[in-house]
Amino acid sequence: MSAKDRTDELFGVLHYLKRARDLIPEIPGVPQGEFMMMHKIHCCLQEGECRGEQPGVKVSKLSARLGMSMPAVSQMLKSLQKKGLVTRTAATDDRRVVYVALTPAGEKIFSDAINRFLERVNAVAELFGEEKIQQITVLLEDLGRAMERVRKDQPEKF
Image (cartoon, rainbow, N blue to C red; front, side, top):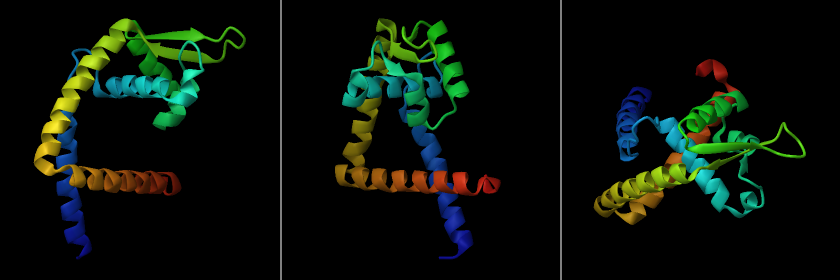
């Protein structure tokens, strides 16, 4: 396959992937990036390594997990807090450490949206097949890691 053919195919696939973001339900007033932040908060608090942290997950851990800068994470959390979807609490022993958690309203909105998302994904999986879903998930994760590595090692290419 020529480089041009590979490029053309990849552009086509990336176009489909961009449209796949439509699987993520729209929440009025909550951009997809903020929804993804809510998802990461929810998942992190469900995992064993974050459970001991009270009253939520450290903002620094979210930053690391999302591959986002602390200022970018803080800005997004500030927006979610203004909407009443998250709480931020400073640690009593070190005010520099901040914990974040979903509020009951945030949990409700997240839960409703994730249920709609799962319905859509299940419908796609039914048509596409579970085995293919697993294969493409692994491949897309590998592609994402490769892209991040190039982005990190060769920033001039991005």
